[in-house]
Image (cartoon, rainbow, N blue to C red; front, top):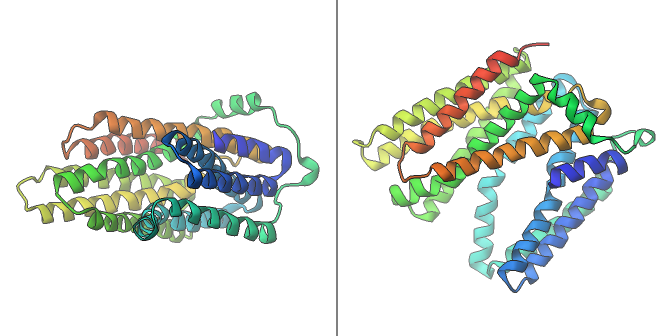
Length: 337
């Protein structure tokens, strides 16, 4: 709900106030977590924290979409995707170090400090990108109707939701595979996250390079094809139970690396192209669009949990179906305009 509220609000009050307001809410939520004395209060604090943090995703995308155009926008989305790819790997490592040294509460205090520093930096450096005279309350229903009438926009939502759903499903299922099945230590498993993040970075950088040769639409279709190929390799690698554990782990990680390179190739261009026809209501359109694909991410991750049965093959087959559907949709609907 955070992406929806901050995106819609940014059309009314501006991008800069929405970003600053979200950072304040994020800091308050982190402080609530630090002082919580029960699991119930901790969960409330986490909700407030997540609601505020959502401003970073939607407002950043909105500001890019309205202030940068063409190939430069595609390239900037690729650069940002490369940086963001490292956060799921680096964040838990830093949090783990703080927890081991000082206790879990100090993780939240570190997040409070981070929110303060980000607020100060944004307050001093972040410009307003929307035209002040055009600020208005945007009706939501007409924007929803326009989106539903454009299959291309809906497919972009499915592709973005599918890519992020695969990534979140991997992080949900991987501990059962590498820690429980292959008996890796949590410390070793933590470093595997860096390998996975590196794949997304490589994919985003390849995407940026390809923009000098191919159209973004063609790059998206290529990324979906690479994802499908990686999922097929992952399925084959998971079937090789006759191999020594170390060799099978290497095969699976290599295949996952290929899959996530494909995700890194496709994702920035999907984000860049999705709302090009909604520039006049870009904040509200981004809010609705982001809410839709985040719901799809949640559904995809839930599906992985529901299908979990302890088998190595379940995750690869799930990813193969998702990436195959994405490739078919991209081939059918994502063509050069």
